View: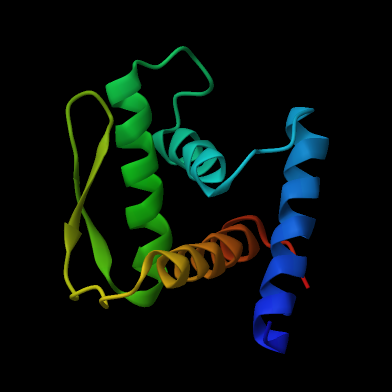
Length: 120
């Protein structure tokens, strides 16, 4: 494993531990963290969500974190308060492992930028 990959995994573990302190339960994977970000970005607080809404929340989170690199821009907020994003820069073709790495890096950037925390 490359030093860069080891650093990413160390930072990721630190983030998961921090989220465990906040929520009392460690997120199980990247999707769980994306769900948390989606709920945060929706701004309606924790509540029961349907399966479709959970998928939408993870999509909102993915768009939000990838917006830091200019892939998405917020298009509009609908009448129910749900953000809608527009793809403005083509995403790179990556295998699933590299896609996960890219998302993890952007998720870490999200927490560092939005909440001004240092995850080093």
